[in-house]
Length: 132
Image (tube, rainbow, N blue to C red; front, side, top):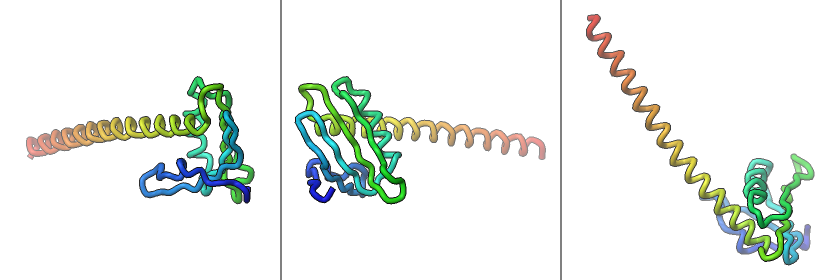
């Protein structure tokens, strides 16, 4: 791991305000093995799922050698014609799109709930006024 190089194109901010440190452990024409400092199962599971949904992925997986002391290691193997770093970029874009869609849908649901709550409170207020 000491000889791992940081993949500059992946050192970008993936989440607003959070910088990730990534080391390349292995790189061939269709394989990439990276270590992500300070992450755990949550991020890696989402990334792996997005990767395996791509038909150009031969295999994608991750390992956390020790949950208390290790950084996760992600392994991606692509089919011919797709660079593994391109596959990861595509997966990150897909995750960002899903997050954006979730946020939009969540905001709509929250507003609908607030309107319903407000109308219920108004109805109860009207009922209590009639009873007086």
